[in-house]
Length: 267
Image 1 (cartoon, rainbow, N blue to C red):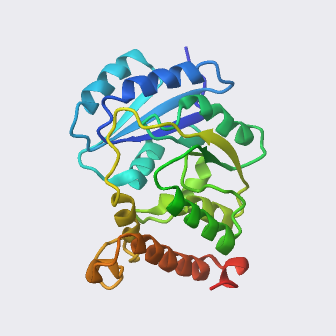
Image 2: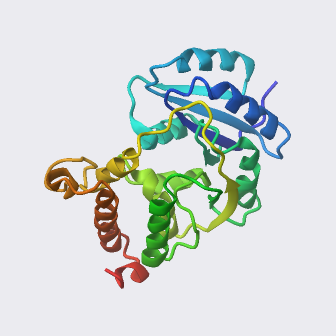
């Protein structure tokens, strides 16, 4: 008997999430089996060193909607999302982490505006306290100011049409700019509130990791070294300047590259 076509693919980058994955997949089953759309969950094991491969193998025998993609080494969120998209069957993608800070019960709410034909990409607006709220707030305000993006949170879970992936650049941090590029390409944007919960089993990154990863946008190649390196790498400035420097360089590039009049007026 033929199965119904998959409508929604949940894309889940996972690095050392062996403790969280059983509960995450169980909650996906609980939240989505009664949803008004067919679905699959595509988990990308991004070079995990814990028991994630064994856990996913066991879960795959229990939950038929689960699909697994494996990276032999860690390649990061952007590559994990691209690998998941290449393996996915749905026409609507949902980016969701496996660490249970966001619960699968909120996925139908993100997907609903797309299914209703009201939007092409739906961003989740984080509700609650979180560690990097200050930096995230600056980033979101700059996006709204420079590019006129009509959403308040770009660094969160999101649902989007498959075709939006086509316009994303082939660089290691493309996911940071997904919403901005989609808006520039004329896709319709909206947002929905999404509660943010405390991390469960997985250990959070060290406090500087977010700032150091921001430095990867300092050079066009995504490298942290070379002529495009941030001043932090040579002068020992506090790591917070990395995010400011990276965003300044990125915003200048996008002003000239996107051709958006509202953005170039501020550059």
